[in-house]
Amino acid sequence: MSDKCEFPAKPARNISRRSFIRGVIISGAAVSSTGYLFRTSPLLAAMPHRIGVSERLITLTVNGQQRRADVNPQETLAWTLRYKLGLTGTKLGCDRAECGSCTVLVDDVPHYACSVLTHTVRQRKVQTIEGLANPNGTLHPLQQGIVDEQGFQCAFCAPGFIMSAVGFLKQNPNPTRNELAQGLSGNLCRCQDYNKILTSIMRGAEYMRRS
Ligand code: FES
Ligand code: FES
Image 1 (tube, rainbow, N blue to C red):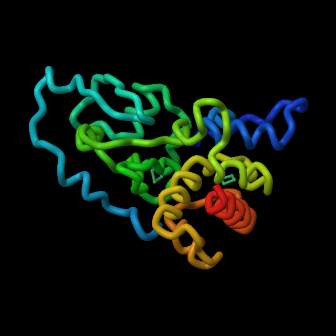
Image 2 (cartoon, rainbow, N blue to C red):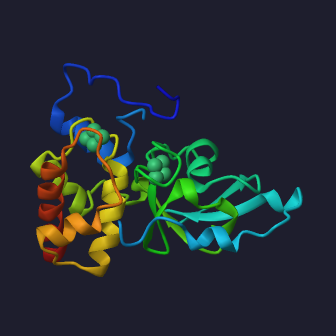
């Protein structure tokens, strides 16, 4: 298996399934591995052709914070988030715009972070799974829905699904189950747990409408 596919170790016996899922959906930390908005990112076209050494030191806005990083011209946002900023909740699965594991929001729109060059998002607002819960620890309503319905099995795909769903629900806060399935069609689950994932996110959407 590729070293990019860091499937999780089996949770310790004294960790409940609920707390395991909770850990993943807050930060992605418990695991170590749309159709409508994804595929080829227009951000790729915005890449400057030549970047000098001094210009590699850039400031990014991630989860509401200004973060400095030394970023190579060809570096993807997924790489920068995971290996320069330590935000490993963003997963790398295929690394070629197929699985959706790496989904983050750029200016509130879901993007495959493996297919966005970091230099193209310098003036934009990036949100990852780590930035979803309230700093006081209160879960985002979507995260709470997933905890309550115990969505996902291994949960490797969970951060990507959640960020896609947050972006989709901004556009369509009250979707039918079929609309939601269509909206999340750019995300794949290797455990094939789609029914439960949809049920969890439908519950989360309901919480979002109430909040
Ligand atoms: S890792 Fe980016 S789409 Fe699969
Ligand atoms: S990949 Fe395991 S729950 Fe989706």
